Amino acid sequence: MVTNAVRFTGENHVDVLRFAFPSMGEEAIAAMQEGRLPVIVSTAQGPTRVKPWDWVVRHEDGTLEVVDQVEFMQRAGRNEARKGE
Image 1 (spheres, rainbow, N blue to C red):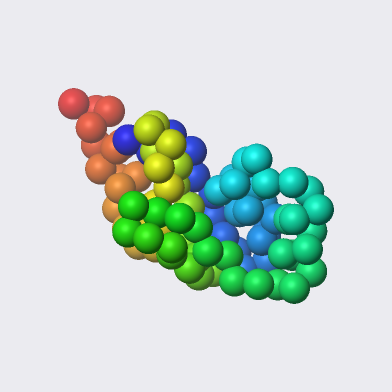
Image 2 (image 1 turned 45 degrees about the vertical axis):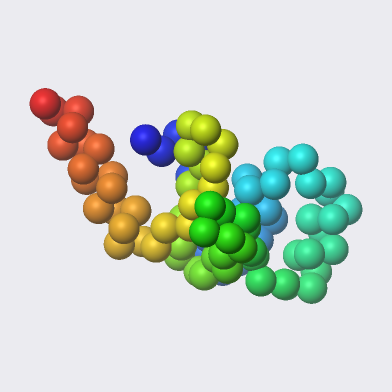
């Protein structure tokens, strides 16, 4: 089950970095944003580059996952269907 997620728009680097790395200092985030470096998060599959419109998902156990828009919407639909059961 997804507990939290943030969508990367290609412009909201800071929001994604704060979400993925909550303990990262503001100076480090500002430096990364100024350089517009790619957003890369550590997942169970290894370092994963986040592309615009991907979602970064934090699961209940704290692990991160990068999910594309289609998969995210499919999962949301399955979760809604389960609520009705």
